[in-house]
Amino acid sequence: MREICLNVRSFKLFVVASFLIFFQIGDNSHVLAQSHTLDTLFEQLQAPEPANIERLERKIWREWRRSGSDAVDFLLERGMDSMDGGDFKTAVEHFTAAIDHAPDFAEGYNMRATAYFNLKRYGPSVADIQETLRLNPRHFGALGGFGMILEDTQRPKQAMDVYKQLLKVHPHNESALKAVARLSELLQGTAL
View 1: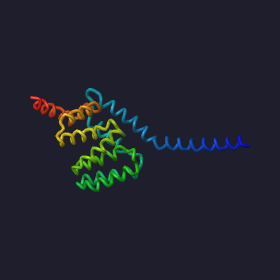
View 2 (view 1 turned 120 degrees about the vertical axis):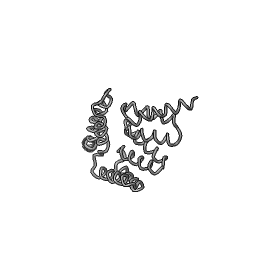
View 3 (view 1 turned 135 degrees about the horizontal axis):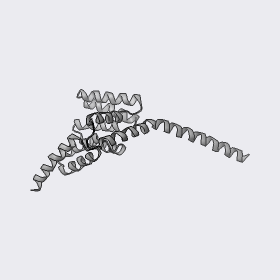
View 4 (view 1 turned 90 degrees about the vertical axis):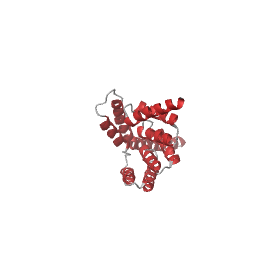
């Protein structure tokens, strides 16, 4: 009798575990598809002369902004609309709500970091950039924002290092290329 009870219990645990695994895979299928698509786009971006850099960047941003949840995508869109209108405080609220609903969605943190940057609140911006990069190490937008903060806070050497890291991910990023040239000149002048 005890053996039957253990078998029934084991079976129930197996069923629960199977459902959890199924729902985990179901919930992450968008992430898995997104990763494959992004891998392909980043491979194309690494080409010596990509066919159309701007188009590749737009496709990457489009993938990054897809959370897999209509509600979170709506909150992200509302935050971006608020930023476009110059209302960065409201944008922070929308992005915070998106993060609360999807704490593993890197773009929620990145967009909130951008809003904080525009409010000149560099501490929270850097914290969100760190979280963005933890979740998405290839996020050239977050790296670029971090480089800008370092420049704004008079840390040219560290900014240069961040821009060089960005160029490893996106070797044709025009802003980073210009920043590296500008900072190289500045740091050379400082060394004299």
